[in-house]
Structures are given as C-alpha cells and as structure tokens.
Image 1 (spheres, helix red, strand yellow):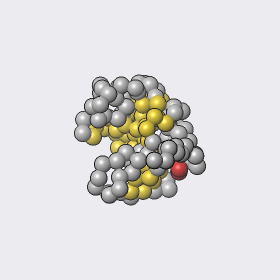
Image 2 (spheres, one colour; image 1 turned 90 degrees about the horizontal axis):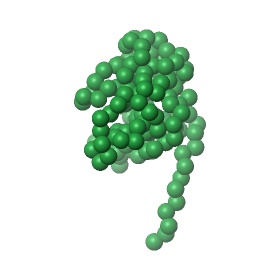
Image 3 (spheres, one colour; image 1 turned 45 degrees about the horizontal axis):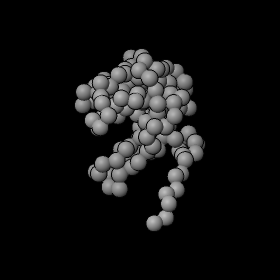
Image 4 (cartoon, one colour; image 1 turned 90 degrees about the vertical axis):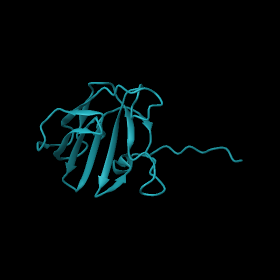
Amino acid sequence: MRPVAGAVVRPFDPPAEEWAAGHRGVDLAATTGAAVRAPARGSVAFAGAVAGKPVVVVAHDDGLRSTFEPAVAAVPRGSAVATGDVVARVAPTGGRPGSGEHCAAAGCLHWGVLRGETYLDPLLLLGEDVPIVLLPAG
C-alpha cells in the first residue's frame, strides 16, 4: 500500500551511474501533518534527522527498507508495525521552489525503497502502472 494517497508529483528517476545525481524514490502529494502509513509489515529502524531533515525508515520483513522524508515518527524506533499502521506524520520542509529540497513549497512526501544499498521504484513494488509519457519525434 502507498504510505499516503496523494498523486505522484515527481517519479522515480534513477541515476545513470550509482554515484550520479538522480531521484531515488517518488514524491507523493501530501500536506503537513498527514499520516504516513507503513506500506508493508516491519519495524521502525530509524527516526531522526539526516542532513537536517526529518526522516523515518521502516525495515520490512522481506528485507526491503522504506524511507520517508520529511517525516516525523509517530511511534518510537524499534516499534513493530503492520501494513497500514501510521508510522509518521508529514513534516513541514521550510523549503522553497528551486531550493533542491524535496517537497519544497507544494507539499509532499518523498518515499524511497532500498534493497541493500540499491534504490528501487516504490510504485513498481506495489504493482502500480507508472505512466509513460511519449515525447514528439524530432
């Protein structure tokens, strides 16, 4: 299940090289204070700041990890969670358009999924179709 119900405002865009810039997750429309739900069963592995931004990580029973930003934990680190349990609330970003921050002014939740150190497209793991946009030839 999706952690929030909002539309995709920025899709997964992995870098060409592991070390290069890219978008290693999806941004889902969400308002400050919105509930962030566990997409699958697991436990809260991390809740705190990363580079000054509030982040929550859920380690799932299948070995995957979901990361949520900006998010403030609603349950303590180590808590077991079931699919759909509220694990966090969307936090304000204080960002502004063009600042490079996720979810700057529009309001959203960045959801990343990792297998080991490899980022995966969260929507494909849910079996959701990701819209394909065809550009004009030329």
